[in-house]
Figure 1 (cartoon, rainbow, N blue to C red):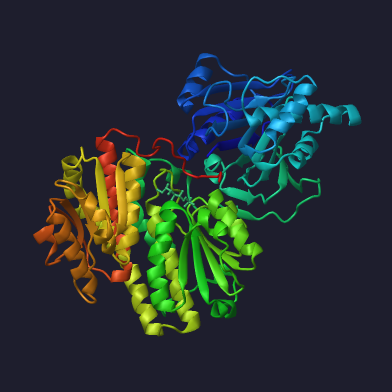
Figure 2: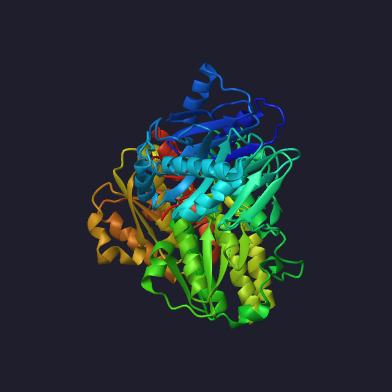
Length: 629
Ligand code: AGP
C-alpha cells in the first residue's frame, strides 16, 4: 500500500532531503499508489514546504522541476494508495497543521477520524480534503501548540505520542515541524515502519527499499512504538514516552541494485528469471554435508517440534497456493495433518487451536494485514506461529515465534513469482526438518529428497532456456481468448490455481482454476469449442495413477473442442497426443514438480499481459502489499 520515506541528516540546508525522498518513493512505487508528495523543513522556514500531485511519481518530479523546492535539513515523502478520499492533488499526502508549521504523512486507516474531525471543526479548524490523514495533521498541530503553551518550547516527538494514544485503527505516521528542523518523528500501530541507520544521517521507511541505496543497516520498530531521528541520533519510546532500548538491528541482505531492473524491461520478467536463484538461495546454509537439515535460526527446541500434532498454514493469494503445495509434501513426509486456510477466513471460523498446533504464516511482504490478524489470533489461542517470509524487519515475522526467511531477494512486481517457488522450498525444508525430528523419514530418505531439491534450480533454468518461444507462440495464439480454465491434480492443483491467478491479476482475463477431478462435477459445462484449457500433467513415471486420470480429463475437454495447453514432463507418452500446445519441463520427483510446472505459467501470463499492452509490474487496482483488512 502506501510508501513512506523520512530523512534527517544535514546540519545545513541542502538538496539531499528531497533527493532521498524522491529516490525512496521511486523504489517504493511497486507497492502501488495513485498520488505522491513530499514535505521539507529547514531553519528559517515559517511553514513547511509541501509539494504533492495525483498520478505517477513522474508528475510530482516534473512539478518540482518546473518550480524547485527549497533546500532543507529534513524531509518526508509519501506515495498514496487511496483508502478514503479519491486520488487527487488535494487528498495526496503530506497534509499540514492549521498553521502550516507541521506536515505529516500516513499509511493505514484512522477509524475514529470522523469523530476527531467534528471535534476540531467545533473549535474552528477547517479542512481542505476528505482524508483521515488531514484530521491527524490538524490534531497534531493543535497538540504541538498546546505543548509549546505548556512548556515554552516545541516537542514534536511528545506531540506525536499524545496523538498516537488518541487514534484508533491502523497507522504509520511521520511528521516534521519547521520549529524543530533537525528531526523527523514517526509512530506505528498495525502498519509497518523501519529505521535506516546511516553515518551522520538516518532514515525511516515503510520497508527497507526506501533507504537501501544509502544504508543497509536497519532497525525494527515494534507495535505501538514511536521514533525520533536526527542526523546523529535515533530515539525509540513507547506511546507513553518510556524508552525502548532493545530494538532489533539487522543488515539488509540484498543490494540496492537488486531492487532495480538491471537491464530487464520489467521487474516481473527479471523476477521470473531469478526463480532458480531464489530456490538455490533459500536452500543455502540450511543443511550440512551429511544431509542433515539445520534450522537453528528458528530458535525452537526440537522437543517442541516433536510435540506438534497439527499444522495450519495461513496465507493469502499466491502464498496460500504455496501452502497448498506444501500440504501434500509435509503430510506425506511427517504424517501429521496440515490444514491450509485463507488467512481472512481463518479467525472467523473459530479454528481449533492448541499448544500442539503450529500455525505457519506464509507471506512475501510480511505486511499482509489479513495474515497478520490470523497470526495474532493464533497466538492469542496459545498456538505457536512460524512465519515464512521474504522481507526482513517486516511485521509478521516480528509478531511470530519464529521465522524461516525465503532468500528470493526483493520482489518488486505486484505479481508474486520467485517468492512463490521460494516459499515452497522453505515449506519443504520445514517439512523435512519435522520428519528429521519426528523420525518419520529415514536419514537417507531425507538426504535423497534434499539432493532432489538441490537439483531444482537447474531444472527451472532448463524451462527458462527451452520454453520461452513455445510459450510466446501460445500467448499470441490465445491473445483474444476471453477466458481460460486451469486444471491440476495433487500438487498440480495448487499450481493450476496459481496459474489462473496470474492471468487474472496481470492479463485481466477471467480464469477458473480447479482440481482436475472436479471437471465432471460441473466445470466441464464451461467447455465449448476453442475454450483454452491449461492442464498440469503429473509424471507418467512412478505412481502414474495420477497421470492416467489427468490424461482422461484432457480427453474429456478435447472431445468438447477445447484448445488444450499442457504442462508435461519431457518424454511424456501422451501429452502430445492430446495437446494443442505442450510446455515441457524436466523430469523430477512428483512432490517437487510444482517448482518447474509453475514456471511456464508465470511466463505465459507475462507474455499475454505484454501482448495486451498492460503494465506487468503494476497491474490496475492491485498493490504489492495489502496492509488493510
Ligand atoms: C500474488 O501474485 C498476489 N500479488 C497476491 O495474491 C499475494 O500473493 C497476496 O496478496 C499475499 O501477499 P504476501 O505474500 O505479501 O502476504
